[in-house]
Image 1 (cartoon, helix red, strand yellow):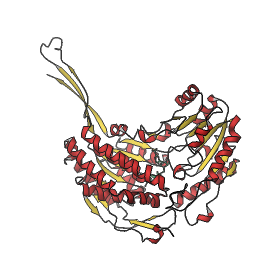
Image 2 (cartoon, protein in one colour):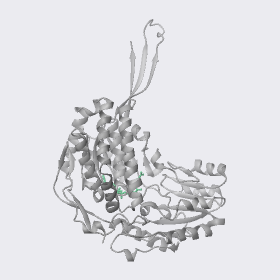
Image 3 (cartoon, rainbow, N blue to C red):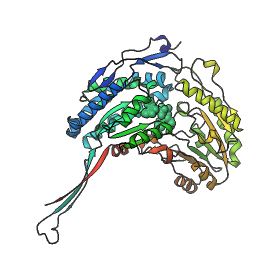
Length: 494
Ligand code: NAD
């Protein structure tokens, strides 16, 4: 029995509202996807608590010191906030493993250390962020107005009160990615994480309070689902919504935001193509472990459609299947475990349903396709590969969000581009060919937010975001900062 099973569920987690840790009412159980046991319990945010959080964030923006603070002072608070989170790094790793079902290497890297590093980076940026974007002084006298000057400047001002809504797959990472850049430029925030993965947000609430983030600047509501989420989007006191989640929810958010013509950032779903040309360096391609989808395939930019040129289709699919069969399906705490569970029961059932759909559509199940029976209880599905897939099948068009790859044959670069782009999504892609000119041509033709040429694109470097129904806006790195400012132009005639 793992240490998580032996431990009693963690209780006493609180919202953060107007600078206070609030125990709140109701209870929401966070269930470990490895064991199906409750591992933590949060309060369930109510509409009244959402109203108080919005009022606090509005007041902190309109009347409080945060947007008006000297950049160095704001940076110092954010640095203390990042340090308080860093001090709980091992706890955050534990949470990423047991709450989200991440394997240890992923829990440590992308789920914890990368966002912690980003938090420190945004704290530094807060101290140096240029609020005057450009300044053009036309110092020569105006015609007919001797001695007078004309000045024009563009100022970047904080966008206001931000509602940040985050998904279950990379909860801490996505929350940091919204909260820190928004605070760095002087916005105030209400964060609503996914209720099933809100444990890390409870740590964030404690860390913010310990760091002295002023009252109302950051508010965090735990255990809340769509009902509270919709209030936070629709409320006229909120200026902008920063949302990461499914395309279906993104559509709803845009609809709700439209009533007050609210600006939105939408980071939504994907069905990205991994294009392997016949002249690819296959050793390089297989070194990226295309058969081992990170976080059991629960990532927006995962390369879940493998487009393989006909000449090498049989060889490449056989090797991917081989790679999948070798993935160690061990225990949560075992560092050699290569594939963990789906994050929750709904996701587990959804993935199995899609496998059934693939079978009915006539694709060939080359490996996997079943729950991992010997690992029950737990929401684990075998790494699965479908071959003989046509791009018009549902398993090729719809985001499965599980350890399921579909392999689609193509003939020639033009067909690869056509198939890659035949998707409502446009977030990521990779292209593999020894002919760099051809690889570049394919990469530049595809309408996605990032593309790797003979590699996997590094989304953390930014800009990260998507074309088409993957959404609106760009995050990560300096690109996030631009999302949380409004531009204001001044023209001054002396
Ligand atoms: P989801 O849309 O079900 O939920 C996301 C968040 O929205 C949760 O906090 C949820 O409580 C909230 N929510 C649900 N309905 C709402 C409503 N009507 N109004 C307001 N809030 C509402 O998404 P999920 O299942 O948690 O996450 C998986 C999805 O997220 C996948 O589609 C994945 O591709 C996407 N994702 C995208 C990115 C990206 O950067 N593009 C990153 C991570 C995940």
